[in-house]
Length: 336
Image 1 (tube, rainbow, N blue to C red):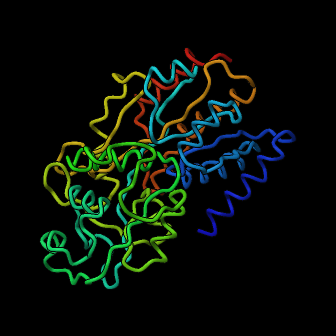
Image 2 (image 1 turned 30 degrees about the horizontal axis):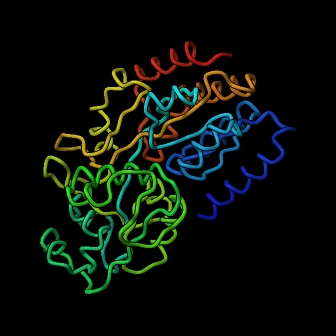
Image 3 (image 1 turned 180 degrees about the vertical axis):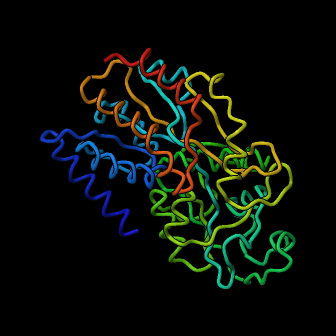
């Protein structure tokens, strides 16, 4: 966490002096922040150009790109084609990853606790409020579950991670769909709020008997205990790159206007059920064309040289055919 906060602080400080440096400015989703940070460091070493990325949540990132205060925005909740047209924006997927439930339960290791979408929905609805509830115990007959109240942790900010998480819960639970639904911000029936993936990870890590949801890289970096999940095919799966790739393999990017693809609850016995992509937003007619061109150089570099770094953090790089499509989008839709 200290490492991540240091990067955020450095990025914000550098952003305040960006008029004096050839740096790229971006803001938005916390979901891709670990890989963005890794890419930014490598890119600066190679080119001398920096990336000042504010990890402030998808909702705030969308507002900043709409207001033209940054060169690009980042969101895990993609905008639909009509919204892109209205705002004069271009959108494309940058990298894929996964959201995992994380818990703080004494004596239980990563991957031992098994949860289903319906169970997660009932926990976040407040219907299941103790860890030894019969429904959780039924899925976990070999675990010694505490007779303790569940502390539910969720996002307090407008969040693409929340969008994908609630989209999955809406698909897994009719009750959730009718009472809460899908959104970057929803009326939560239960829980305490935390800002960003960083905040949820920190809160769960410090709170006994807590549950939260974070991008997988945050779970790993903060050594949080993650749960296994029952997927759409009824199979229990662990959060692994292979499981994320199995879910991502169903994505039909070429057929989706504005690359609008949601990867939750995908079919397949090996698929991780809460897989997601993170998207970049830029203006078709940028105010600062030089800054826009510099951002495209960075994204080109990330697609060309960043795959290994992404994989090391358990993200899924975009397939080569999709990268080619995106490059065509840049040349046809963004005026340089």
